[in-house]
Length: 121
Image 1 (spheres, rainbow, N blue to C red):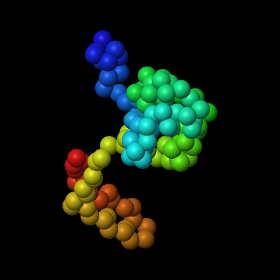
Image 2 (cartoon, rainbow, N blue to C red):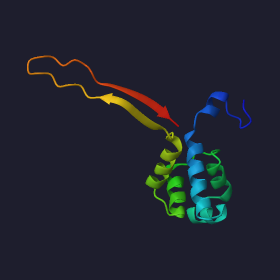
Image 3 (cartoon, helix red, strand yellow):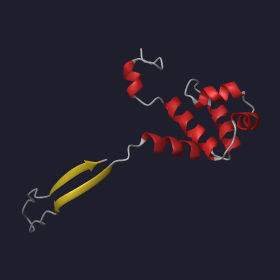
Image 4 (cartoon, one colour):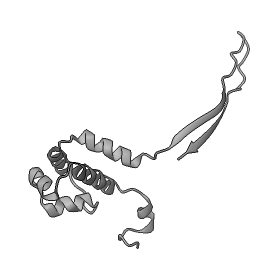
């Protein structure tokens, strides 16, 4: 077990509840809001909201909708924030790309397209 309490394989993977918690906490702190304020508006306990934000509790869709509403978000806003957390910031560079020449009528095309693809962080 690791320091957080998850097996090592789970430490390397992003748990959805953890990513959701990160997104909610970032939204709340960006608005300068307290756990107490958001929990009261969402009608959940401060302790429960704290555990959701820390990825310790898996919130139901109803609780997530209530917390999102308290933050002025929709579920779509939350899912967008989660997607941004999960999507790696990878840039793809394509160099040396050549289009194949079109075959004359009646002849088969020969594969001549080539590209060099490099992933850059």
